[in-house]
Length: 121
Length: 164
Length: 89
Image 1 (cartoon, one colour):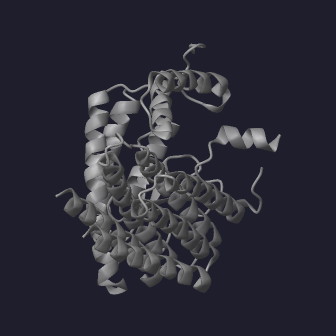
Image 2: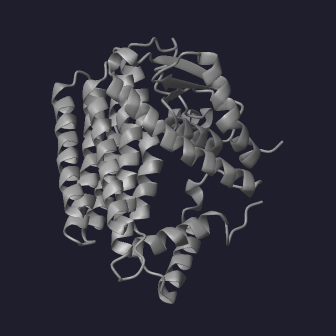
C-alpha cells in the first residue's frame, strides 16, 4: 500500500517537473514560458519531496520532516524570482504576444519613495 | 512603541520551527537552541525589519492558506493542460489590478499568491504601489480576472494585515 | 514497483533537464536564459531528491537545500544585473 502511494507521488512529481520544462521549451514568448517553471515545477518538486518525507519517515528511524523546509523555500522563492524575471523582461522590452501596459518596465517599479531619496543623497 | 526584548512575536516561533526542521530532531536541547535563535535573530537584525507584523484575524489567515493551497493544485493542473495543448490554445494578456492593500507585507504576499495560482504571474508593481501588472496565460475576460483576484486573495489579506 | 517508478522518474527528470538546457542554449533573450537556468536548478533538486530515495540516504537533502538557496540568490542577482547594470548598489 505504502509502495503504491510512494510510486504514485514520485511519478506525479516527475511528470509535473517534465511538463514544466516542456512548457519552457515549447511555448511562444518569454511571458508564457514563465508560467511553466514557476507552477508546474514547484508542484512537481513538492510532490517528490512529500514522497521523500514518507519514505524516510517509514523506515523506522523516526519522523523525517526536513524535506518540508525545501518545499517551503521553493514555494516562497519561486514567485519572487518569477516576478523579478518578468520585471527584467519588461525593462528590456522582450518580444511579447500580449501588449504590456505602456509605463510598465520602469526599473524603479515597486520601490518606495523613501528608499530613492536616501540613495540620491 | 516597539518592544526591545521581543520585537517580532510572530517571527520567534517561526524561526524555532525552521531550526527544528533543519536539524531534523525534537530533543529538548535543540528546542531550547531553536527558541534561543528565534529570540536572538530578531533582536540583532532589528534594523532590517521596517514594519512590525501583526495578525488580526488568525482564522481568516488559516482559511486563506487553505484556499491558496487548493488553488495551487488547480493552477498546476490548468497550466499543465495548457502546456500540453500547445501554443494555439494560449491567449496571454496583461491586466492591471488596482491595489487596495497598502502595507509592504500585504502587497508582497498578494503578488506571491497571484504567481502561485491559476495561470497568472505578477509581472510589475508601479512605483507608487497602486497598481499590480499581472500576466495571464489564458485570459478570456480581463475584468472577471481582476475581480477574482480582488475578491479571492486581496480581501482576506486586507482583513488580516490592515483592518480599518 | 518502487524501483520501476524511480527509474521512470529519473528518465522524466533527465528529459526535463535536457529541455531546459536546450532553452538555455537557444535563448533568444537574456531573461529566457536566466529562466532556463533557474529551471535547471529546480530540476536538479528533483534529481537529487530522487537519488536520495534511490540510494536510501538522507545525505542528499543538504545538497538539495544548498542548491535551492544558491539558485534563488543567483537568479535574483542576474535579474538585478539586467535591471540596473550592477548588482551591489
